[in-house]
Amino acid sequence: MRQKIVAGNWKMNKTMPEAQALSSEVMGMVSSEVTTNTKVVLCVPFPFLPVIKYLLGKSSVAVGAQNCSEHDWGAYTGEVSALMLKSMDIPYVILGHSERRQYFGEDGKLLVKKIDKALAAALTPIFCCGEPLEVREKGTHDTLVRQQVEEALFHLSAESLKKVVIAYEPVWAIGTGKTATSQQAQEMHAVIRKQLASKYGDTIAQEISILYGGSVNSKNAQELFSCPDVDGGLVGGASLKSREFVDIIKAMK
Ligand code: PEP
Image 1: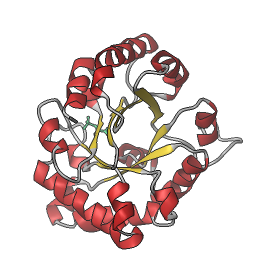
Image 2: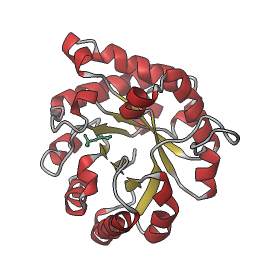
Image 3: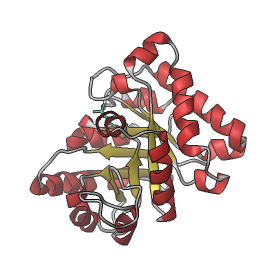
């Protein structure tokens, strides 16, 4: 049975004391909500990782990074490698978020390298894909998302693919308050799963968690998460408030 996951993407928000307070609050409220088949992840800014990792300790909440380099080591000022994350026991890393694609020019070729580095370091990549508004309006969103999935993931063996989490995040829904309807989300998740099945077979495709991201909140989470191919959420703004985030986690049940 595939895992249900709610991952918070804090982006570039919070000071260290605020980060500690938010993590403690989430950890305190969430323990009874998490079962063996569900996972809660806080993807926090790099400088907070060791402190939040220590603070969460052996609780049911895991920590993740929001990016990693395509290189292992060397003269790449400001970068953080998958090996560094691994050396701190960080289990998750978001890759290919639309903000990285838009502001830092990340494309499929680069994401292949980053995904390979993450997997080689035994991290779980949370790979993001999703179409901008103009593509949705043209009606070619299926084609674009399929292309994003294929170019970043289809070089992987089935064994490696099983270690990847996919997040479908329509760009027009990120940070806009405009959520995809549950029907739109389900349709696209089914398209992705079918695409995975055509390359890797149905058994593998059924094992991959596909999260929805884009203005998820405590009011819409339950309907979105009840879709058969939606296995949880990648949550931006609403993960910055403990009560709201925990209410989203509760909607996974
Ligand atoms: C995100 O950043 O991945 C995201 C989905 O943001 P928000 O929930 O704020 O739309």
